[in-house]
Length: 272
Image (tube, rainbow, N blue to C red; front, top):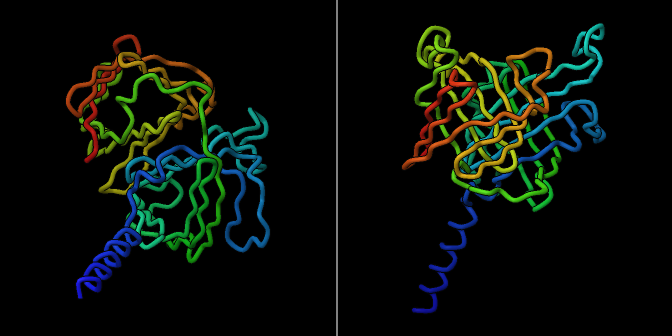
């Protein structure tokens, strides 16, 4: 009888472990290598647009940028669309599935609030995702993706910013403030998952997406250096590759970021 009880306890422990895994299992930044969407029957290499997906502690953000696909840009100007779109939200790992909830989606606001379940594989080198999304614009749309982990040539000097943060206060240029004017009811999320930092501005009430940005980053405990990858608010893409530094002060689950010659001050609190 005792052996039976022990065996049953062991089985229940195993089932509990299999049914839900720590979300940190996916932590990292990934760049898409190939995909098979919609009615496609063959895998296609992702060679004409950069697609990234960043995971950290139950939150995710994806973005399309440096788009060179014909028809997606003005061929008379730069020949490239610096920013195509972004999406993001929360996720969990349950019963062997990757389950994501959409918090913002620049291409289709009807997808906001949707929950999608995907099969997935994760390794030190790759993240793979297989499944179907379903929205008014993309009904029963197959999504199959293979992405390679983005790595840095140097270690992170200080991990104090690693994680997910929400903006509590924001002031830019002396006139624009979070919670006022066009930033009323705006939510701002910032995800540090070394070597990338990504962020998005969106209105969870109206489902309106405002913009997003991303950069490679380094932090030494006092100074944050962001080397821009994409920034949706500047259409010419000239911020690409620019390195900006910000003064950071960390204190008990909150950090203050200051820069732009005193014109920028942002206060973030860490997500639960």
